[in-house]
Length: 267
Image (cartoon, rainbow, N blue to C red; front, side, top):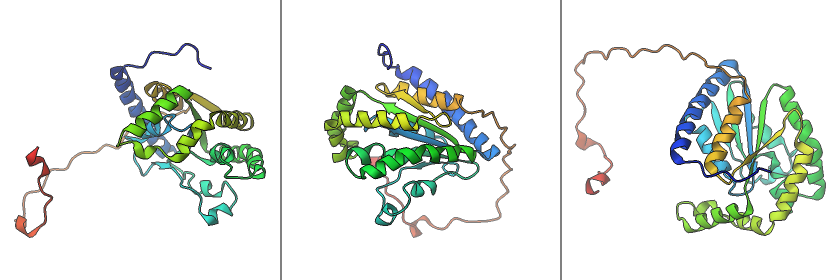
């Protein structure tokens, strides 16, 4: 557990360091592409722990053709009959790609187990197979990083309250989120059991204290950058060509086209 709670990081310091780290993430992206590396980052944690906001900042300035977010919906009836890890394998990166898992195969160790969406046998099988599955990924050359975002019950409650009152964020609050309040200790036991079985040398878990979202984002991003042997890749030398002289093209009359009304004129 962390010691005395740190003061909330000032916005100015946060934004300055965020920009610096996002610049480094772009360099990491170019290194991944140039080296043909495959990077998987798993984001897990309780509801409202700050995973989504962190993923958004990580991916904000990255090329979506290189770095993509995998946030899988509920499995289909067909997927329910597959090997559990099968649908996640489809989203693993090829050479030169980064995949950010907004929740992952660890759904089975958390919400599926706590809410009774899987059987006890399926849960136990997951705990046995997951370390094997992840060792296979690492042995094949995938760079795997796993982050657990830890939020206190008091802070989670406050974040739920703000979501409930904010029409722009209310969509983030689901009945499943509210259920997690009454099952706090069940989720805690599930998390502890998950760590016992899946915190392996080849793919360890890293816990991110996330009561302060700003600190959580920066701490997670700094750790990811420090954990990888990337280096700056010189960009290609580009030069804007001179614009050629006109050859007599005349634009068609504007009244032949449909334009978006100028909504801003009335502001």
